[in-house]
Length: 160
Image (cartoon, rainbow, N blue to C red):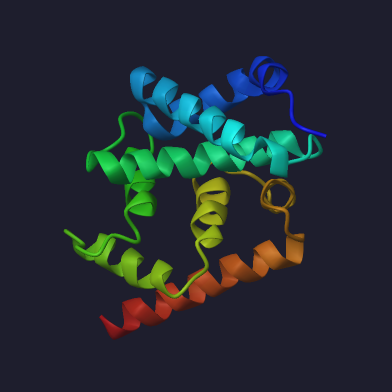
């Protein structure tokens, strides 16, 4: 059964907009990102089920917002903007600072979803259980990813 996009927009639009605002720190950018999330939903609507729509849209809002930060090449505005920028640009080919370079090397060896896990847990302060629910993994899987990120980061710092 196809997703009712209009109903999803009315029901989940405010949540998606809040998430985009949190990551982008700019109302205009957040609205653009929210529209991109729902545009993507329209494109994928037939392939999706209404089950877990909140989790899917939250993850999509996170990913689209991080993509907007990357594409704009600018820092988001607001609290945690430096950390958000570092996570968003972790995969950039040209790292402009030591920290960015370190994160680029760290995330290059990780699945892309590890960036999302790091953002949800470290930036948003979500519990491991909440992160697991949002990304569709087990708590032990999320814990393992975070442990792996920390261990790999320590290795990179030791080598630097």
